[in-house]
Image (tube, rainbow, N blue to C red; front, side, top):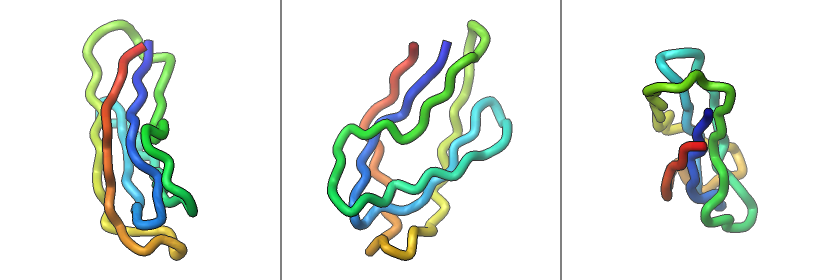
Length: 79
């Protein structure tokens, strides 16, 4: 069992952090030199069957190459 969060990677995207069930946060840099819509931003697998919570935090930080700190999410899926 797992989950995936989809969003945009682009020249103006920032860094967010993801945690599952209150666990350790993992930083994700959404910067890309070219736009990628529907990109897999965060994937977690190996979860036990049942209810889980993914917490997404906008850090308001960015890669030095990025022109902004925007975080654009599209959707999430469970597998």
